[in-house]
Image (cartoon, rainbow, N blue to C red; front, side, top):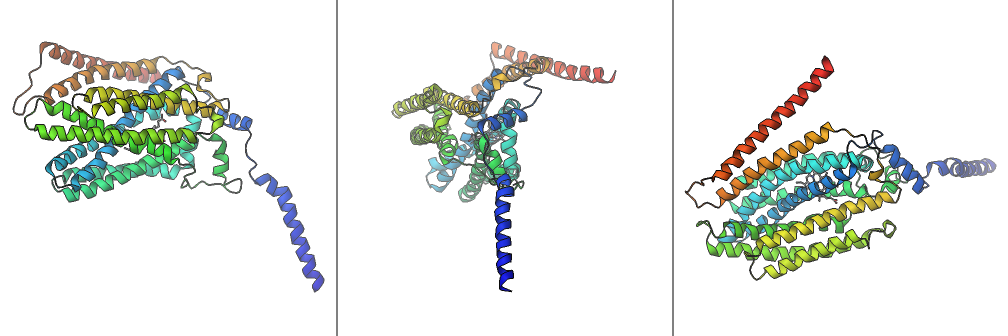
Length: 441
Ligand code: HEM
């Protein structure tokens, strides 16, 4: 009896040792070598290569992301201020809160539309990064849409109830919470994409399982989140308030001077404090970038800090006369955003570069028709919007009760924009018909 217990114990121990030696060693995750990560990335890239010069797509990706993120910032920042403004009793705060709620509502719809462009460029030139990371947190990523919808509806509810400050405030709080959640998800997906050497480890929990639920968030960087979402949202909305005051200030009687000064001063303060936080967290984020990326001292990193400092100096000077400095502050803001957008893209290049992966080495499968259609559409859009925006700009500055009369040049611009849209439609539908005819005849 005694002997059997010992025998069993020894047997189980030996089996355990054998298991660890034979199976455990194989199953447990030993980490991938840089060469293996490089192989993995290259195997995941589309074998068809790039349909157009990757550098052009990269530039468009950076520019369209900058456009996308500006309106994301004015959505979040507009709501943050609206919540505060609705809590205050003073009429100026109440009025500005309603205006910023309107800004947030319009900005979300623009953010959605403008988010598509960087998404398309990103998935064409960085497909391994994008799809791998999106799949790691796939369920969250699906929820991105749901949360965005809920947030957007809440903002609309706030807008409909804007005359009732308590209700408008409550709905605005709901709206901003959901937008911040959406930002959290897209942040995690973008951030995880920068660590391809960890994907397999994350997915297999270190080699013991397979996490295919998609409900895991593997990486989050609070400094990056704050420096790419929360603080710039406050700063950008501040600059917007200054522009709002500048735009309506001199021309429209229903905007009293006192309200204009109030909005501009408040805007310049928000821009200053939001901007200070932005710089601090941007630098903190840079410090968390792993040193083996060789990115900390790069020219792009320095340029992003300098861009932010330049903008901050302008905003600092603008404190004295925020209305007069509104447009200069906008220029400073544009410089800051572009340099930050380039830095953000540079990090992706640096991260992938560790594994010898470069978008510039893609096989080029030049396909001229699609880019021609794309650039044609872009040009059409620019002509059309140049007209629409110019008219909106002029009409918005016309005193209440009057109708803006377009000049002769403006009429010609209108005709040109109608012509170019018709031409575009003919080419667009024509190309479609030719393709169908070629396929079937
Ligand atoms: C209004 C809600 C949204 C918020 C708050 C938001 C926020 C953000 C943030 C914070 C980032 C940067 C993340 C990081 O790098 O850490 C980002 C990037 C991005 N967003 Fe949005 N976003 C929103 C809506 C959308 C929508 C609807 C789309 C797609 C249609 C979209 C597409 C993208 C893409 C593709 C990127 C990455 C682009 C690149 O890496 O070049 N976003 N967004």
